[in-house]
Image 1: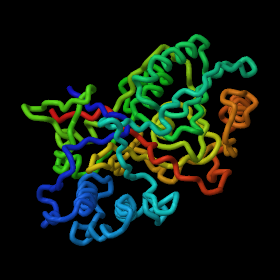
Image 2 (image 1 turned 30 degrees about the vertical axis):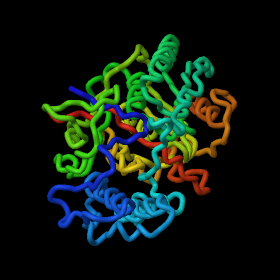
Image 3 (image 1 turned 45 degrees about the horizontal axis):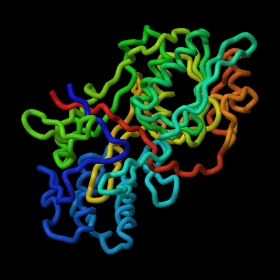
Image 4 (image 1 turned 120 degrees about the vertical axis):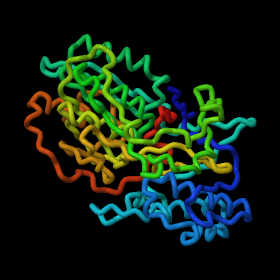
Length: 411
């Protein structure tokens, strides 16, 4: 089975051309126009098929993407279009759009960016994802061994696997019952890396049990998102894969939930952990929230710090002209089918987090709270319904997210 390898945060395409869908809008869009008009058209036509909440998007003629063409600069026009259609789907729990802006004028999840080009080659944009491991420690808490791991992001697994393997091998030698995962500055990254960490923490008896699933919209699951034929499916070397005798495209991917359900598969030799403490903040988002969610059905999971950002959404890049479009593409659900943390995860033990903590310092306020609770006994934790810090959270860098790099071709 072949797997698609996504170059970090760069979308793929067959070039800037008029995108047409099959059996969707009639007419799909005008066949003549300016470059900006065609770009606006393409963004909307992709959304009509790929966007997670495409069921509420009006047909092309009603929405009329070209109404933004007169706005300048061009990038402003594209962002205004994206923002407008991102506000259609309402969350019944809040009465607000699922993509209600954290910062004015920006959808909470979807975004568009200009592709950087240097010396004729597409530059890889890494944003906040290169930091990875911040600190590890083994702490003796009144004779109790506690493992501590701070992750600033989830980089590509190939870049951090060796380090993670060594860290967890060291943890295993001390046989800790408790582990503290510090995610307060972690805005997300590669879902494969978050999954690998879960497999390092989990005991062997979870192997084969459902970890999580990715749910695309019904059109994607039915294989009817024909517009994706304009996005190339590449291998690890960046070459287009040959599939059934022709160059493969993203329309050839299997987007069903069954094909995108992932199971636990124990890694490493750490078998002793029963209680997991997560330190969160308003910056904790996407793949880092996913790590918390997927462990909840099986281990004793406790959270402390501040309410998280709230992003159970993943995406992949779509290349349109000189831009990469990142539409909310799929919902991440844990083994219990839970994904309802659009407004953030409340914490069990609320505490205002510090902006620049000394990672791994037992006297640092959040880590000290976790260690104190471990010494008291986890059964004393009472869940809080409100975050301590009620000040507005700044929008995370748009580069953050849940990035899937194992999409499978249909059989």
